[in-house]
Image (cartoon, rainbow, N blue to C red; front, side, top):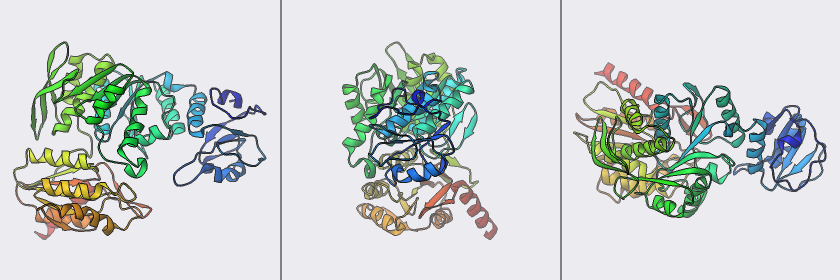
Length: 483
């Protein structure tokens, strides 16, 4: 593709002097081959401008920069914002696949993965061809692709869109993180529908405060045709008031366009009445917890906005499956229950513990930690929440990353000490799980919180295999041999 074609609608600070052929694009100099355009992106750990010579050595035909730099041996262009430029360039390079799909976005602190999965399930049930992009996996129809982050970098995202178009997808349903909005990873995507689930404390290491976190989320609702908003959430109420596009609200408590009443929650799932402006419907979803009512409402509202028949949505929800790592019941063959849940925020932890308390016949035992190199403010808050709601707690490691694990644990413990809950500290997560299973009593419900779908643990900068399902099976087999 000619460089001029590639740069259509990109805000440049200088005109093109050489209209050369470009064979590909990269923002990582290690992925540059002969004929590529290398786009310099400013990151939080490094800066692409530092790797210009590497890119040229690997065969870059041109360089796009944001900073002023010295003259180079290949054509060099300068943009106002190389992150926005990368998104526009990617859209041009892949022939605007975002215009050949109906993009659907879900944002919020909690619930994104479940809501997007439910939306895909409903659309699949309705006979649509659907791609999915999110935390657990990327999917093209039923084909599962690996994923490294909730929302890919724009270049990778548009490439994925192009594959979806090639495979005949009609919709793409995606989780959109606050990071991706702030960093313009989804810049230029015309979302048909965007949903807001909630906003609770998380990612303050990145955003600094809740106001900045909210403002990042709010960007999405300047990019969509229809907004779906949970107005039981304080930030959702604010978003609905400030939002400029057509909006559908949902709630359990407040007055809204779609409202859940007569909610019945059991270990087998939720049943509720859904009141709309036209009718009252009975909805059933086989995933337990009050949060499942909200997730169900969000998915229902999105699909209704997309034109899916209400009865078709209800029928789809009847057969919808849970999401791995979200209130996932692990078979143990014992007289106690073990649940794996991704809860890694104060709100998420409170939700899963309250859900379990609704049906637990014995003690609620909560095993959890907090991730290293992430928001430290939430650690004592989560310790206090777990202590106030659980019968017994085990504080352990999550993904300590480059932090000292015991420093993280001590910060969690500070909040735990404000409660009267009995607890123990076991740094190594495998040992902590062994303790929980060994000490379990009949009727207990053990919550392993924080890891969820993850099959690894990050210690230092090393990602080590760690699948809690496997760990549980291995420990139970060892205990059985000793019995």
